Length: 415
Image (cartoon, rainbow, N blue to C red; front, side, top):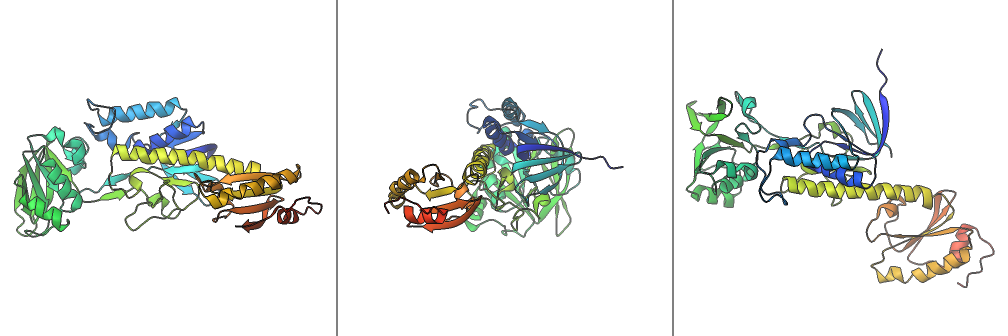
């Protein structure tokens, strides 16, 4: 007999415990929202495998990825964020209440923040798994350049990321070898980067090659390449191999529930909102110009703050706007045309005499409530009766017309 799953309810459920997810949790927890963070493997994500982080603000002496992520987690826990180490099996974002299901539990929440990160595409060559993450195979030149000062390193790939990161590495490394699967002179990067790289004396290109196997003990010692035409083996002695052959976002489970673009990323707006109301995406599941802890933190902060506002707007909309008959004036305080109507609203409120309520909604900072009312033009005035919008006035309205819409026959308005 199947075990019945336990149901738990939260304000916010965060899927993924990397830098962006934990930052979102810090903001949500500090806003006193009941928050759950689900991480199937190691809290901190890929950042935990970085031995040295020297470009994160506030750490002039540098820090390790593990230490930094431990600090993130401690801060999130301080604000009441609950951590659950399990894998998400399915999601359902079709209703106002979002459903996140694991092997043993069903979590219901008002908001879901997707922070499931991604994984670098690997070569699949022999012994590769033995040297992943801080054992010689790296996916971040910015993270590991300094530790390779004066050493020979190898780059796999010839796209924009590979070549640009390779040129950055020449500031630190003694020699940067680049394995390119194409014929001599043919690369996948843009022409400007290609010209600069070919002219760089510290970069040496190994044409028509691909990785055959990785060799070493506890740490990488050499990478054996293979010429794709002659099948000749080309060994490269190096303590670090940088792989830049693509990136795979962990979004497969969400494909039927939110929009996923052709590259597998989740499109979001400036507020980190997906096109599904109440669902946000942050960090490496979004298509980003720069994938770093610092940019992930920015994403998480925005999403955590946006989630707080979203939930607050739900409560205002349900408990204040729809709970009583009345009118809602939707305006933008930064626009003079809207401000001119405030006197009309004062007049309407004076004559309401407690019969109906008057609510003002300023969309200057957030359009959440207006969007829920399907009002996209300001100024507008909506008439609410029996929990429903029965009429919307756009641009112009009078106290008398509002009274008529409210069904008040003895309106004493002057206009």
